[in-house]
Image (cartoon, rainbow, N blue to C red; front, side, top):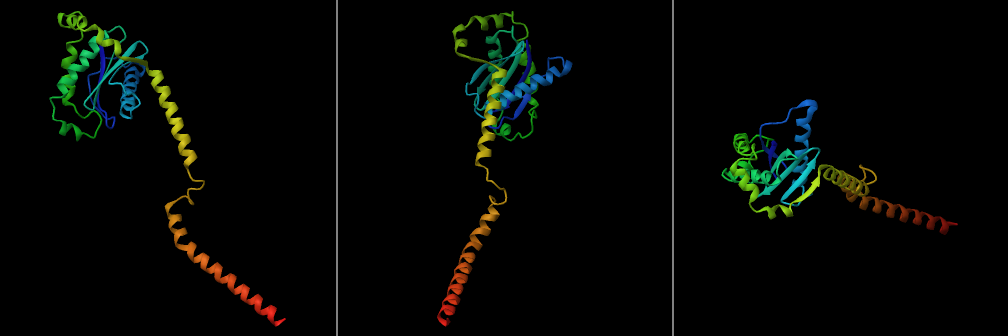
Length: 221
């Protein structure tokens, strides 16, 4: 059954809407799955997950996501739930989402503040609770081969790649960092550009004065 739904914006990874929670929150289980869904959305936003459709296994559940027109639709289902129905569910969400004015959606800045879509999620979810309805059985029988190309992975693999990429980024930043924050600052660059010519002139003048004095003393002797 459908247990968690999140709709997010791909360009910045902002979660826009979520369905009602259908997971008991014993020991923070709901919070854990929601955090994992947000991780998936973040990875899609930064281009780490390039496939427009994917199945992601986590424990005895599976995430399914669909990316269309810069919007990501993610659903969490029990592993026994038919994958084909999960993607039909996401496609129905995408169809309804397209009916809203995109200019309004682009102005959203707070997470999960597109509450108007929460009720849409709830209504569509009702159609997918019973997998044995005539409508759902027809969806399961149609176009079976279309599911063969959907990429499948595990949430642990996504987390592992993310951690590795962060390590590489930190190493690169450390290698390119200046030895001293002070000497590598823009302020020190300005000071150096201003005073270096003056220091050179003073040094040359001091050298010439020293040379002149030495020549005079040599002449006197």
